[in-house]
Image (cartoon, rainbow, N blue to C red; front, side, top):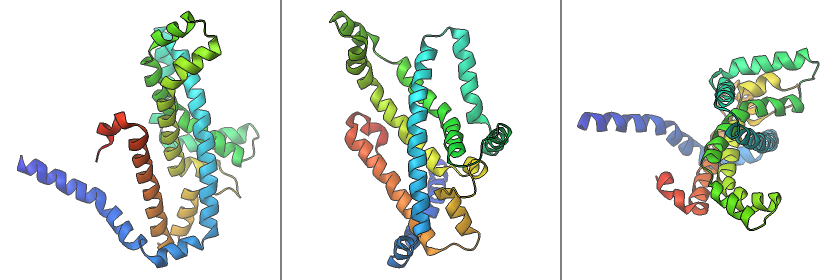
Length: 246
C-alpha cells in the first residue's frame, strides 16, 4: 500500500512541477510588464475569446436541439446518431483540420474567420451534444405535464419547466467547449487565413525564437482564469461542491 501511495505522490509531483515552474517565472513584475506591452498577444487573445464564445454557444444550442431529436428518435436512429457524433471526437485533430481545409477549398470558400468559426463549431458540436444529451435524458417530464395541466402555453412550459433544468448543463457545455476552443491549435492552424491569429497560434509563433518572459506570465494568467472558473462554479452551484472540492 505504501508503494501505491508513493507512486501516486510522484505522479502528482510530475504533473504539477511544470505549473510550479510557470508560477516561479511568471510571477514577476518583469514578466507581467513584458506581457502588458505585447499588443499582439492581447489582440490574439481577444480573437480567441470572440471565436470561442461564438462557436461554443452555437454548438451548445445546436447540440441541445440534436439531443432532443435523439430522445424522440427510435433506438436504431439514436445509435447511428451517437456513432456519428463519436467519430469527430475519436478522429485525430490533425486529420480533422486537414479534412476541413480540403473541404473548404473544394467548395471555393476562402480561408478566414468564417472557416475558423465553422471549423471550431464542427470540432465542438459533438462534445456539446453529448453533454446536453445527458441532461435531456434525465429531465423530469412530470414538470412539463404539470405546467400543461395548469394551462401554460408551449413557450411558457419551456420557460418554466424545461429551461431551468437545462441551464446548468447549458452552462457546463459552453464552458467546456470554450476551454477546448481556446486551447485548440491544429484545427485553427489549418483553417485560418493569412491575417487571422488566435492565442495558441500567436504563442506558437513566439516559441519559434525562444521562450520569452511574457509567455510565462501568459501561462500564469490563463491558469488563474481556469482557477477562477472553478471557484465561481463552487459558489454558483453549491450542490456540486462535493465534486469540485480540492
